[in-house]
Amino acid sequence: MTAREMQIAFESWFEHASVDHGLISDEVFRYINEAQDIVVDQIFAKFEQDQILVDDLRVLVEKDAEVDALYAGGDSAINGLVADYATIPTNYRFMISARSEIKYNRLGITVATDVKDAIRTISGSFTTSVVPVRIAQSDDIHRLLLDPFNRTRFREPLGVVNGLRLLVHTDSLFICERFLLNYIRTPDQVSIDGSGTDCELPAHLHRVIVDTAIDRFVQRGSLIGKMLSLQLQPES
Image 1 (cartoon, helix red, strand yellow):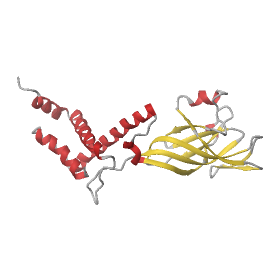
Image 2 (image 1 turned 90 degrees about the horizontal axis):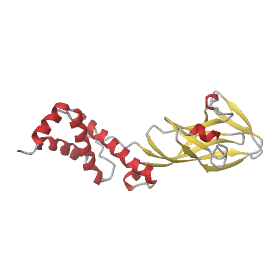
Image 3 (image 1 turned 90 degrees about the vertical axis):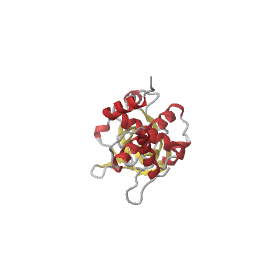
Image 4 (image 1 turned 30 degrees about the horizontal axis):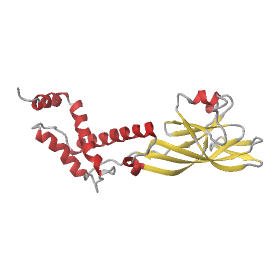
């Protein structure tokens, strides 16, 4: 469906029920875009469960988004561990995976910190490598950092998403230079304003989004909800 067709489908449902929803065009699209977010959340919940990226979300995947590493400062220290972080792009919705370009030395590193610019540099010899970041849940991160079998390592640094930051803990052997992020972005807002923006999700989801938008509106509008309940009840 185009954006206009989604609006018509929304309004037609109420016309069929002989109920005036009382919404202007912008308000209809507010419900449609809210429903689009709900549908994306539901699909991602399935991905979290089986770790299979369904085709419905592939259009929203950003691959290897490159972000420079910044030093998180003393507040990130846990038992002597500090952290570097990536500022996640503002269109971020869900993290899929991340890698980090690190600089390390198995014998230990000497680090100089530019506090003003939040940048760390290594003096002396080091090796550069790109390694996967093991992303933990926020309620597990402290336990993992203190566990000698699961702590952060230069081969697989331990990180956690905190708002629009990916915080990656380091130790005395390595620092992070930059990050490569794979994430699901927020879908573009559906609109007919200006040049208009159609729904970019697969076509078979458009009706699902419209139906979800209708359900959200009916649930919120108690008076309309009661009217619809009365009108849609089977005759005795």
